[in-house]
Structures are given as C-alpha cells and as structure tokens.
Length: 453
Ligand code: 4AD
Ligand code: MG
Image (cartoon, rainbow, N blue to C red):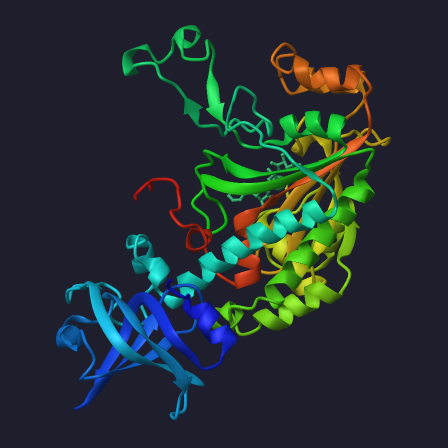
C-alpha cells in the first residue's frame, strides 16, 4: 500500500518498507547517487529521496525529470543534512510517466494569468495545491459547523423556474433547437427553466418544516461583470432558521465566519505558511484578529453617514437609497473600523422581494457581512412571513403569483418568522488565503468569455 507523504512527514519516525508515489519536483545527481524531491499533493512538503546508483530502477533516473511521476520503495531515516528532518532511502524506483522538457511548470514564478491558462496542471504548483486543499478542508468545516449544531443538509435543485434574487441574471436551460428557442411551452419542462441563482426559496420550505437547515451547492449568475470577486458559477452555503429574527441571523453569520477563520488558523498541512510567504504577509495577523474580536454592527443609514463624513474620494456616489459599492464596503472595513462589519436594515428599493419589511415602512431586515480585502462575503435577511405583505411585494416586483404560489403557501399554513443568509464559498476562500482573484480559488473558473477545460 502506498503511503501519503503527508502521513510520513506527520509521523516523523523511522519506518521500513515504505511505498510512495508522486511527481518529481527536482532532481540533483552526484556521482554515486541522486536526490529527488517528491511531492504527491497530500501536503505542501516534499519528501527528499536518496537514490543510490545501485538501486533497481536507477537506470531510468535520467527520465525522472521535473513533472515526471515515479514510484519508490524504501525506508525513512533521519536526514543528516539541513532542510529536512527525515529522508527516504530508496531500495527501488520506477518511472511511471515521463515529462518531456516542455512541461510548463519547470520554473517557479509564473504569473497567475499564465497559471489560469494551464488550469489542468496548476494544482501541481505549491500555491494552488495549497488553495485546493484549503478549499476541501473549508467545505468539510462548513458541514461540521452545521452538523454540530443539528442543522439539516438540504439539496436544493440546480434547475429551477424561479429567480430568487429577482435580478434577471439567470442562465437559461433548454433542449429546444436553435430555430425554436422561443417556443417555451414545447421545451423540456413545458416552460422556461434556468440554472439557479440561489437555493434560498426552496431552503425556506425545509426550514419551515425541519427548523434549522443549510444548503451547500453550486449557483449560477449571468452577471456580465468582469471583476476579481464575481464568477458565473460559484458555490454558496445558505442556512435558514425557523423562529429566528435578524439579530439571530447576524449572530449565526458572524459565528460561522469566526469558526471558519479559526479552522484556517489551525490548518495542519502547512498551507497557511505559503500564503503568508507569497500572497499576503499580514494574513495570519488578520485572521487572528477576526477570530478573536467582535464584528462591528451598523445600520445602512449609519454606514451612509460615516461614508459621507469620512472625506474619502470614491468613484461611485454615496447617497441614501443607493447600493454600497465594493470601494465603500472596503473603506468601512479597512479604513474606518479595521475589522469585519455587519450592515443591516437596507432601503427596501434595493433589496429582493422576500425580505421582511421593517415597521418604518422604508427599510427591510437585510444584512451583509463585509470583510477587509473583499467587501461582502455574506448577504442575508429575515424573511417576510406575513402573507399580505408578501403578496404586495410580489406585485411590486412584478412576480407572477402563480409561479411563486408554493412560496406564498408557507405563509398561509403555519407561518413562522424565519431568517437565513448566503455565504459565497469562493469569497470566503479568498479571505482565508489572501488570494486576490476569485479565478484562482476555483478549480476551473467560469467567467464571461471563459469556459475552457
Ligand atoms: O447577496 P446574495 O445575492 O444573496 C443571496 O443569494 C441570498 N438568496 C442568500 C440567502 O439569504 N440565502 O449572495 C450571497 C453571497 C454574496 O454575499 C457573495 O458572497 C456571493 O454569494 N456571491 C458571489 N460569489 C461569487 N460570484 C458571484 N457572482 C456572486 N454573487 C454573489
Ligand atoms: Mg448580496
């Protein structure tokens, strides 16, 4: 059985009869033996392997170049040299797959743009290996967070007929031939269907039966915005809690962010060190700060007043009734408060139909969690549980009461106050790794004009 390099380095004790396999990072030859740095992707670290010229398989050593895959058996012994505590002494090596000289990852220091053009090979680079191990670990931590609290995991549909956010940014799903594309009643579902922008509406139905639920799946938005924070396909985590108000919602959102940041700090694979070294020197300090200090909470009106009084120059105007732009969100978190900020009670005109109307008649119980370096990572709200108010909202937002009749039914039969939010998984990953572009935390990013691989 093959042992993963991660397990070998963690155990850190002399071992016989080891069998490892992976990709050659570097090889140095001297007269009587060669040194190979082997990486199998299980952790950041390489295993140093000493291959004596007498060892079976050594005849092919010249082909064990950077990028080639090899198998080795041997034993782990303390390393006499500096740089690593342990090294493997090979008792046999085998070339599995060679890598000719045009292997693109020969040298270090490629640009992120170049790495995106070889997205099928970039997980072999240290930085991206770390990103995708963190992605896996964070996904697991999210399930742990909710399962420990007895939230029930619900799989909401990927194909849907409803536009949860009402922004009209949906990808259409159709089996109609090109020349019949407008005949929607003849389409597969007998009506227009889309890829979902959010599982929230379906999530609400389950919260109004199972109390505490969460979704975690892919969502799709045809926003034609080429920013470093938007992808056409991204993953969202959407908890929904019955018998919960806006304050309870904000508490849960902040608790979750702190839990995940702490998880990153306790990362055992050494991945944090590479982000600190090559991406963001202040990363650990910022994460520790977020893990230990309370978030700031301010209303949207307070945020607007602070932004106006702050005297900073912005590209976009700051005015009550306008959306906060990412430059405004970043000023609040980075310049003014220097910590995450939860902004709540937004004007109803700039928010979707499902948010609960406040008693002032002007604002809704929306909340966004903003973090330094990114801006919004969470958007959520308490939901409108009053049937009459919801039906008015349908009319205001031009929603068809038939299409959303099932959603209104929740308010008709045993309605309860409930609340939830959506955490953008990739935005979280950008925050905990310091990676500046969403394209670099997605295995194969889909953005306007890009659908390779
Ligand atoms: O604020 P949003 O649009 O909220 C919703 O979709 C609600 N239905 C959530 C809920 O209450 N259940 O999106 C939630 C989060 C954002 O805060 C952001 O982190 C992320 O999803 N997000 C995106 N991430 C990457 N690319 C995009 N195009 C994104 N759009 C939103
Ligand atoms: Mg939002």
